[in-house]
Length: 162
Length: 261
Ligand SMILES: Cc1cc2nc3c(=O)[nH]c(=O)nc-3n(C[C@H](O)[C@H](O)[C@H](O)COP(=O)(O)OP(=O)(O)OC[C@H]3O[C@@H](n4cnc5c(N)ncnc54)[C@H](O)[C@@H]3O)c2cc1C
Ligand code: FES
Ligand code: FES
Image 1 (cartoon, rainbow over the protein chains, first blue to last red):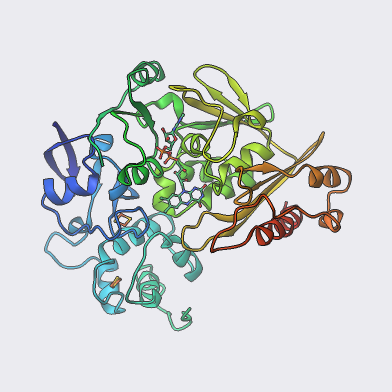
Image 2: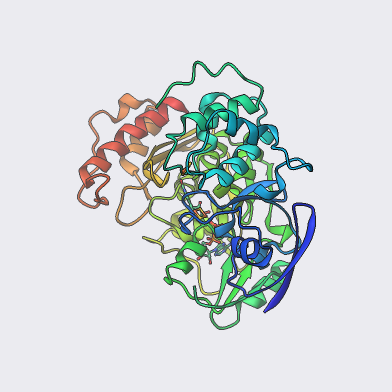
């Protein structure tokens, strides 16, 4: 076992790891942050998406020891300090961008990374940017609306169902 | 997944010596290897991460050649190659999804040589040189069939050198669930001729379509291909498409790549 330390949502977190310990296990079992979900464990669904040094990654497809020392952000680090939702989370709420909520942590983290790189994405860019995130419930429609709203593009009337 | 030790050297020399250990294997972005290890199709006893080796990362162009460090992620190639070799940058920006592109690397993709992967077609169509810690390998000699390359035990790709073409394009017909190529074609036009590489088609992995190269070298237009046909007999056939379907797609996509270049 090797002790790994990372900065998770601004706080130093340490846990004992094996070589095969995945980042998502480090977060869920080591740091007790169970907001990051495992949907497929085969690198397909994006439910486990977190930010490592500012970039969206699938935490089920990274070994914890390979990112020792990194700055990690998870869904638990997205709300404001007083616990109120940030504008992107609020937009998911307002637009009904979630139903069962299982995919939502990954959707929010992937959307946040998308907006950081492209603050006013088109609908097509949002759909393309969220290709790595699968949702079984919403049909994506309201997720796209939420990201448009969060980017200040409130006229979401034109969003067509696919 | 079976247990193993992970080491993360900061120089190429340390990585080479770590890979000499019994059962050692290179880990780059892990976007192929980790899923394969979860399925227990690979069980290395030591994984040597290449992610901490600064000398293996980066994109640089000089004297008509684009050099990409083997551990450079797809997302970085998409950004940094755009000004030098737009067709290659576009290919990199179309691999998988953003999270895969932030981790997966060019060296890992070439070493893996998946028959439906994108980068092998760019390397083959560009006549790229694959540089390792031991030697330089021409792309024509590097790809040796399904998941098979010229790499020897413990050999590491350090860099890939792409001669920059006059014109080029990559056209991918996506398998929508995996986003790998159902079939895809890379066409590159150089002063001394045109090269055409087809991925996601042959049972032997990426291939050059030499008949099309000859035609296009004489007349660089989609119409030059009109009476050419690839045989579907040696093509992959699965629930997504028959061999004949893939052979037909390869021809259509070659024409589109010529038009898009
Ligand atoms: C959801 C998803 C979608 C994808 N879609 C696409 C797609 O559309 N097109 C596409 O082409 N690919 C796709 N991929 C594969 C992706 O591009 C991988 O990143 C790539 O195939 C492997 O690169 P890696 O850096 O992750 O390598 P790893 O997984 O770390 O390694 C792969 C293999 O290469 C070896 N290796 C790694 N680096 C080196 C090196 N420098 N020298 C020698 N050997 C080395 C390893 O030992 C291992 O055997 C997808 C993957 C996923 C998970
Ligand atoms: S759990 Fe990581 S991609 Fe599905
Ligand atoms: S809300 Fe249920 S999977 Fe997306």
